[in-house]
Image (cartoon, rainbow, N blue to C red; front, side, top):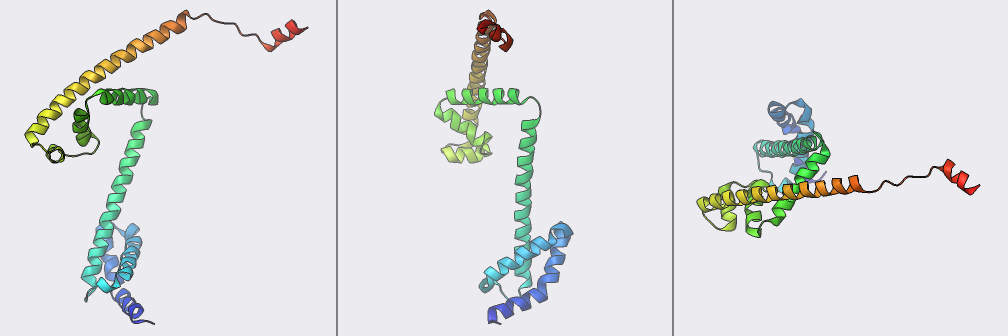
Length: 192
């Protein structure tokens, strides 16, 4: 056995149960084995970085692995919530509404789009978004208010256009001549 293997085996034998107990106290038995396995896999890959005594370092790694697992679960739950939101209600209405918002957004000036997207899609606070575009928080809030106002106007205009287009399509289909289809039985009579 190499020195690294011997050191790792000793560390594992000495600390595994205490790391497992720590994880159980933080997250429960269901995830403990997985987190402990990941913790010791990291310890093996970074064996040269593991100090003596190893337990505090291993507990810190286990804590980080738990935190990463929680973040992953939050992301999975957010995706599940998004999918549930898409399946609730009439999908056609949701798609139509989304398309209307996207059309209205596309009709805005580039600066207005950026201001709205930083907050709505990227989740930045007004202070963070102000830093991105290089203005004060107060100036950003004013610009955001104006951009929201213009987006609302654009959405109303888009909705009006959609209503006019729908009425035109409905009128055209109601006045179009209806052609009779010939059934196979009628065709056979014509051919005989």
